[in-house]
Length: 473
Ligand SMILES: Nc1ncnc2c1ncn2[C@@H]1O[C@H](COP(=O)(O)OP(=O)(O)OP(=O)(O)O)[C@@H](O)[C@H]1O
Ligand SMILES: [Mg+2]
Image (cartoon, rainbow, N blue to C red; front, side):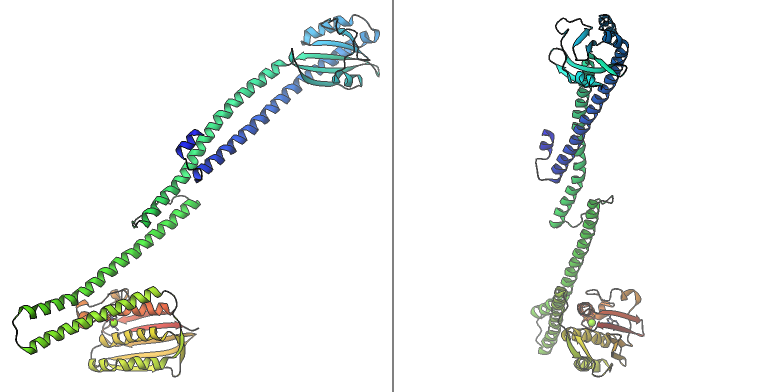
């Protein structure tokens, strides 16, 4: 026990509890089996000896019956001879239990009645046997059988024999079993210590990994071999840390991209301002031109921060925003109205084909942003003379809104990334058109928040088609 305490002084640890449980369980089992085996040996030995001496007693009873009936003193020789042969004291008793012949020829008991229970039993007609511990002699076996002449009980034969040999053997067995018991106990303690240690060792490694993750070191994996509960826990931990790592990578990428996007208008502004400060330009028109450039860069910064804030807010929201019934055709008309001027400038025609009086539970603010971004993209990425169409209808319990253009289209390899933050197909041109690459991320997040789905099909040079599907109540 001292070893256990030293290795694991924490009494409430699983390792300690398991070890103690195993230890006592095994010790208990050993103790019980020891006791049981000892009892079985004892009973077996004694029974064999009893049967042997009962047989001897019966033989003597058969041989000595007549002497006893006749009260022939020859009985003494018979008792003595038999006694020497079977290594027992042989007494022949008359029908009152009085000693008639004694192989030891002891004057003190001759003519006196014996009152042992075995004798009383024999005189009543049944054989009796029992072991007794005597102060001087140790363990002795008493055996008594009735002596019959015809049907009549004329006396009894009583044998007393030393059975200390049996108890010596039993003591030896007990000594060895105790040895075995202590060796087994020590073994059990050791095995349970190792076994519990193996189990809790895995838990400890897992705890260490969890602590590292909570300290910010996300690249932690633990071994998840086997099919037990601890392995399942390890597996779940690995999946968790993998996801955390992915989220962390996404976050870093987002911050890096955002800083990069913010940096380029800031550098332009700085370059423009510096050239004005350092140069000795006196022409007011040049100043104005530079300031206009600065102004448009500030606008771009403004748009970018707006978009970023919107996106962060949308991502933070997480829960479904409140929905209210909105006349869809009116909402789409409002968006088209807002984009009328840019579309005229770009020479792109806007066309609405929306089911009249269609009421749908939506979040007006979010859907407005979705449609504005999609139609704005349609206008931006369609050459003059092109067409942007918006369709809206209810279908099988869903609201389907389609924004379609016949513009430049999106290459297949870019379609997968189109909803990623800051993603733009043509980086240089998009910057010219003032895009931040956040529009479709906002669209995607807003649609998801309303419980809907968005998909896109596009072919290069022929146009793109964005389809939104929103659930009813
Ligand atoms: N209708 C479209 N036709 C062709 N390309 C498109 C269309 N809509 C989006 N794209 C491409 O997808 C990219 C991402 O679009 P997104 O709306 O996210 O960003 P953006 O329009 O560049 O900037 P922002 O919308 O933030 O001002 C665009 O840069 C463009 O290359
Ligand atoms: Mg856009």
